Length: 350
Ligand code: NAD
Ligand code: TYD
Figure 1 (cartoon, rainbow, N blue to C red):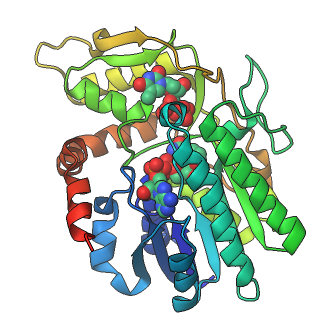
Figure 2 (figure 1 turned 180 degrees about the vertical axis):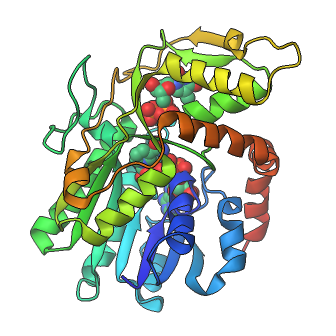
């Protein structure tokens, strides 16, 4: 793999993947980052990379649903691998407005596959980044394995499931070299504060309410974002073509315990003026419709076949994450004020 097209590289996980690949891996080639820069795509996430190693990093503002710019980038940069992170990624938004999820997650993946198919002679790999949410919800016991049937419950997870099926079909039908990864909930630096952990950190710092859906007993299995990125690169290099790999950190937590932990760590690192506990900010609010009860990933295939293991525990990763949000006040301010979006508008007005 010499010229990897990374889609959605200005988002949370994509930006950490690109930084890891260029600064902290054995990859020696070039990354071509294709991102539409939706509200979730923030050029600030990679500003340092764009400045320090321009020779190995190219940014193209484009929609993965559009054939012309993607096709052109394939030719211009001799793309031999794709790593598809681009997606609409937030479940709550998919409940309110599912259209963009269908368009980007299904239509965009289809468009990428079609262009990759036209370049099959050069293509080494199409890696598709997906989620454990395609498997639906677990009861109190059991784990998702690669054999668990797909039973998505939200428009987000249904759109991701459809895209996974398309990628698999291109492998079976056209012999395309593909791999798919289904990962559990990520957290870490650069995560947009609509997702549980960054929302709780930033609200708690401003003494605002911490909205916990339902009774807080829903369980998520957390993985530090860099561990996810290292797993994706390991699968891209050594994963069996045509196969799916589950990625998870074996850190199941009920949401209320996660929120309590965020409060307690913040209280230790940056106590409130009156020394009171931030737990008092927690408010139980109306539950999310179709709220999946529990996710838990069995990642033994990845561990046994490829020797991957997470480097961070939930506690060490959460400490690092909280510290990053405390240290990154400029990033936080530009996200909260929407300044980064204004910059994109001005910079790209044709
Ligand atoms: P994100 O919302 O932070 O970033 C998505 C990125 O995709 C943004 O930069 C956005 O601008 C870009 N994008 C959206 N629509 C696009 C389009 N039509 N064309 C080009 N770019 C477009 O998402 P994330 O949390 O970084 O997730 C990345 C991928 O990982 C997604 O495919 C998601 O399904 C998957 N995933 C996420 C998690 C998680 O916990 N966040 C867990 C497992 C899998
Ligand atoms: P989220 O970060 O949206 O990820 P996902 O829905 O993909 O798992 O939510 C994680 C869990 O936290 C999920 O069970 C919903 C819950 N949640 C809250 O309780 N309050 C919130 O404000 C948010 C955003 C999520």
